[in-house]
Image (cartoon, rainbow, N blue to C red; front, side):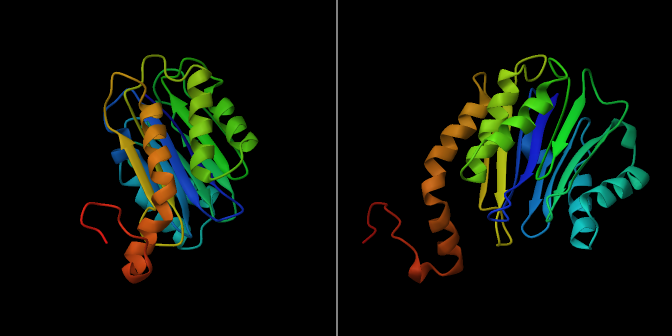
Length: 224
């Protein structure tokens, strides 16, 4: 019911996750990232504990492949799970259990991994990886380009209704965490619209958290 990617920007060290599904609020259950550690997507009959566990393992020194191997060895009902990870060196790894739903497949390269289930065809994850690698600019722009390519390649077997994009960079919280939890229109385009609005303000929101004295004005009525 889902297709996604996890990615690293080698120039900035940012990590990101982008995801879409026919299920509601997919990003709330499936997207995980931690600055200086990596990014994880946990999907297909989701176990939301697997994302934080994988990040903890990588924070403890494991590579993406080692962390995914540990999750595969110790996770509950792991045959139903699909877990993607990228680490600080750009290494990627994926576990796709044999009980993943419908047409399921995966693709990965340095700095990016994609997986999906209940897909329209088995070429969707490779289209996502190829688009991410071919794109340039901010990691948020690249994540959205990849998701659009996945949708254009067929996406899910049915319509998608929710999507999300999470980005982390140096601080302890996501610098962007944009979601469309349900729509009858295209949720990826809804997230893209939010990103167009949020991207120019991203650095200002971080600065306001770190030191509001040095932050730009808020641009609201009454703000001097």
